[in-house]
Length: 271
Image (cartoon, rainbow, N blue to C red; front, side):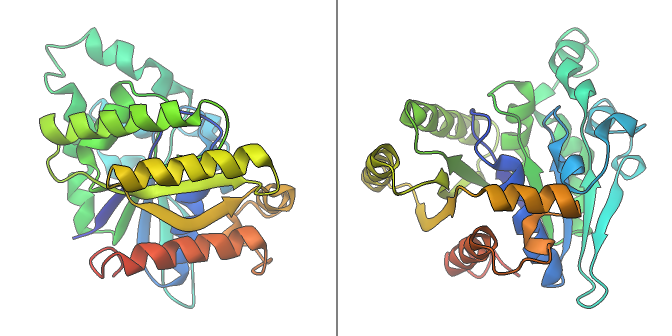
């Protein structure tokens, strides 16, 4: 049975897509079959793999509306050596209308927070890992993600007001665990876009670690550094950095370290 990890927070621009695709890249290179589900209407997962999300006939929106998931899934990476792969259930601007379409047809969608689980749960038998890129809010789509996932990885950019966002997403996860998904677990908080040379980042990072420790929340030692070079590799190669030719990039190495830390949390999480 495949593992389901969501990368989720209620803040944009904190590397949700990057974490999702780069961890997916490492897992595929290790020989695992990975499905990435993009639930953000920006469609950035497809863009990471050089695909135009506006050209997809079927997306996760159609699947949530009732289309068979297999009709929308595409392959975006295959590793001939390890036999690992990455398939994608893509998203685009259609997802911006999901909440309106569901809530105005409640007689048809009577269990709105479980649409994703109902549509794709069977795929856990096909893939080793299902990784979900979440939207930067706590609306209906994010609720579906939290209702389906086993584990949540929370990106945290150490900037002003970031602690407030972290507290909010943790409260939401707790609520969904109590009301919709008793198996939901916080895999950990990972600091992103970190520049430890700045006083602000160092202070906020310290504050976050203290908060997590006091509230029994795991926070990874690994931090994902800020890097212009990393963004360029995605643009030029149309692949996540972990699948690019520059394997010694400090950002690439940080994603490997992050996956190693996840593995250390328990053998049931990797393999």
